[in-house]
Picture 1 (cartoon, one colour):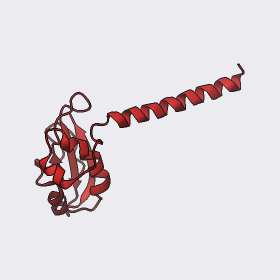
Picture 2: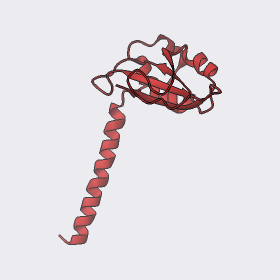
Picture 3: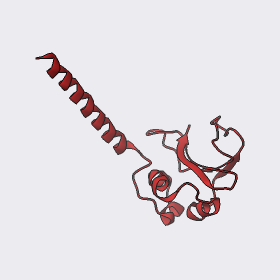
Length: 133
């Protein structure tokens, strides 16, 4: 086999591996199994909220959304944090963080999953992210 052909084979193998990894990671993402619904979020069982978290972030939580609108959509947060770090030692990214706990996922991702909604001083959403321990 020529040297050029070997290079092409290696590049194709790497590209195919990348595609397969992307498919598998998307398939096993426990936070992206369901479309978000405020009504479903309110009555979700022990794993239901986690299944909607990624869709919630991408479709329902635009930057600049007010704290009041967020809480109308999701209900009261499980915890509201201020300061530099949370109880797990994670650095907080903003003036105030609304924390929702959409259950534990120790077999797939985190032992404790946290939906962190970071707000600025005007109580507007700066960033939403799924994190945990």
